[in-house]
Image 1 (cartoon, rainbow, N blue to C red):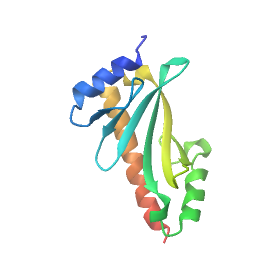
Image 2 (image 1 turned 180 degrees about the vertical axis):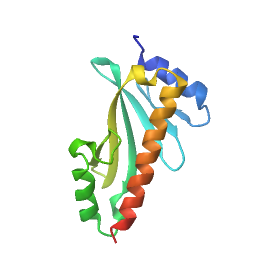
Image 3 (image 1 turned 120 degrees about the horizontal axis):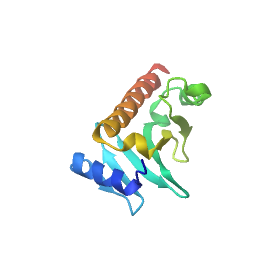
Length: 133
């Protein structure tokens, strides 16, 4: 299948019109339960999408340094990240980012799986941040 980013954008807007927010020609966001999930096309790789969300502000974690180290260690074989990569942004927040083939997002079920993966990841890592007291 040769699925394109614009088709994903249309699917997301049709399925979740109240959550959909365009972000230029090559990106959009979905406002979900307590977080925004952003989708962007990958220049030069028309079969891929970048999916990214802000997980938690490190300032909200009492032992932010220890929590950040644990989050970055989770990137080893994607332990506890459901395939995404965790990183610390310039704004001091923990982000989850994943490159996902557009073919995996080609229908409502694929989009729902992606949303479930990221919802679970966000919930897991927000809970973990609270454990670093």
